[in-house]
Length: 311
Ligand SMILES: Nc1ncnc2c1ncn2[C@@H]1O[C@H](COP(=O)(O)OP(=O)(O)OP(=O)(O)O)[C@@H](O)[C@H]1O
Ligand SMILES: [Mg+2]
Image: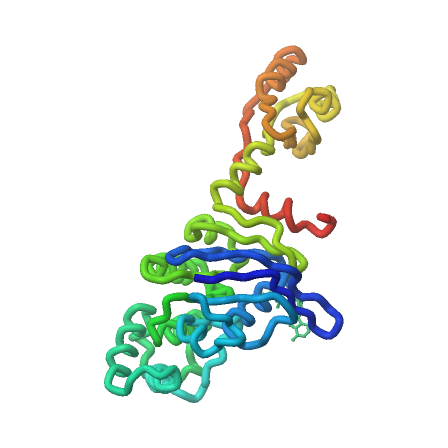
């Protein structure tokens, strides 16, 4: 559905994205992650036909987003980062206007607008001026707008930004449901959202792709290289130093009061040091109230791949 090949965009000397390559198949929900300034919006704007790339190609449903912009766009519903809504229009009026603009046939407009209002939960505010809506409802109107022309592909640039936790849940559910009938490319900073909704994830950092895989596989990597948490009373021992000597332990961070200490052990990929930690505790007569293998999260993957000194 989406094919991106060697896509590069430079703004006046600054390279926003460099040599991006990825594909999104029909029916996938693809998460698009990266820190601020990574190039997510730039990529999405190019895909939606709002600006040309400096070099490389991108196509939607086989149509080049630049050379065959009209055909490519007819497959896309795009929800930009800052939804540009007309604040002095009422919700229904705005959606009618947008539907006409998108070429929805006249006789079908009212039915279609009714459908998207229902789907996105904006019926209760349909008569309100957009300018008076809360942020969450504006986002929903933006999403309703993106759905008007029944696109196969939704490109959603941070659809849940600025929403409260309840609204985030609702929009997440909505996106999940939309994923049954649409292909979706979704950028977000909320990682649990990605774990819950996306079939695959691209992580970009400084304009380059750092990883492209299923959430499970990405998590598999951090779980292997995961860590161990130990909470123990080590008395006068220097627990940190002793734990560091265990083969397979890369690093130990200690925390807590003089009595109970919490040790976070970072271990080498594949190593399970719990048994050795237990032996050490017995040998040194430490009281232990927790010894667990920490489950890696997508956040660990994200931080590992995109922290500032990552090269
Ligand atoms: N119109 C522009 N002119 C010059 N530089 C730009 C322009 N738009 C974006 N950039 C730069 O391109 C880089 C990528 O920006 P982009 O908006 O694509 O990032 P992003 O991943 O969407 O970030 P965020 O998470 O903050 O939305 C940034 O360094 C940004 O400053
Ligand atoms: Mg952005």
